[in-house]
Length: 462
Ligand code: AMP
Ligand code: ZN
Image (cartoon, rainbow, N blue to C red):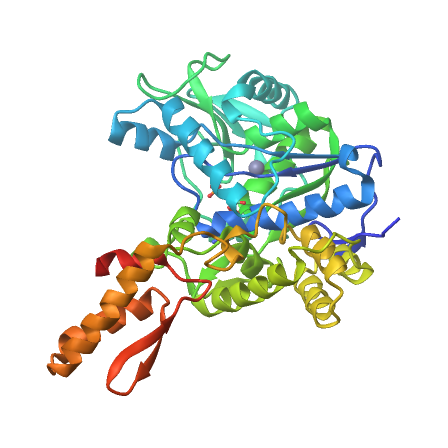
């Protein structure tokens, strides 16, 4: 059996992965808060842990891996959106979950086996909070329940921070009902129009962290194998999850291996709405980037390194995938190369796996390339339509040819009349759509339609 090694954030070492139960390898990944389209940063953990899911299934068997990824469907950002739009919370979260699954599907992500919604586990959260109070790790105060951080000796073991560092660095909320500013909320009161449930502490709703502790316990039990998410979740979210679960069920419980993907940036800068470099996955797809290309760009950087989304990388990925599709479309699938499996088993070295795929292509071992790339979630049977030639995609018809022919003539005439503004603008529209022009002396240019033509851009020439 392939030996998998994973870097464990908890121990800060790369360790041989040994499942607790080889018949049921369990992985929990923190999913999105559902109030808006996922941005491309949100897609990084989805793609990273999808590759790990595929690898685990390959090594332990499809029926011996359980992957859970939650939806946070109770959150103040969702409440704010409901207030702004006048829509119900359920309506907003249902719609956003639908978008999320559709957009992540376009990136070739398999759906996890379990997709728990926080609002469906409120009784489990209440039971866990009661147990924490009973054990002295939590206390009710003014309709809230807070986790007593000082009581949990190992607080900070994941992010390796001391309590003093945390108080100095974190934006801890000081509130009169807290015994200590570091104490975090397990339950809080809800007023009339906020979502809420009856509880021993009054009408209210859970704090954010408790959901993952309660849901993973319900679905996986006290111990499971892998817990993942973006690096931004390491503190405080994951630190608090550990405190809640280990305080409740014992020190050696909860996830054995913790994995965190580094953050995604755009053209070297942190993504932010004010910089105008903030894209949803849907926006990128609508701009014409195939999901498979987006995925390939993501996988070309190791998950533990910051990854930069650039247009240049997307163009290169597109060219590579186009070649690979051409070579493998009519080839029967072989078996994944040992080199690719070994790269992935070495802490998910997706960059290394792609390099091996490139070698397979050079050696013309297309059967193995196809199988190996599918381990990465690319070159799947349903993924290559975008890479077919323009003719095969059936998008070139007589109308399109006529539009181009007319435009080329118009441009030629404009040039003869020295109306260069018009001739240049026609040229720009054609080349922007991808049409290749071969200028001729004293006659209209000859033209070619490349495979990546964007026919929608030809509309403007009608
Ligand atoms: P959220 O909906 O904000 O809770 O985030 C959902 C997931 O996306 C979490 O695992 C985050 O760590 C991850 N995430 C958010 N922003 C980024 C980013 N820029 N790069 C990589 N992962 C991110
Ligand atoms: Zn979580």
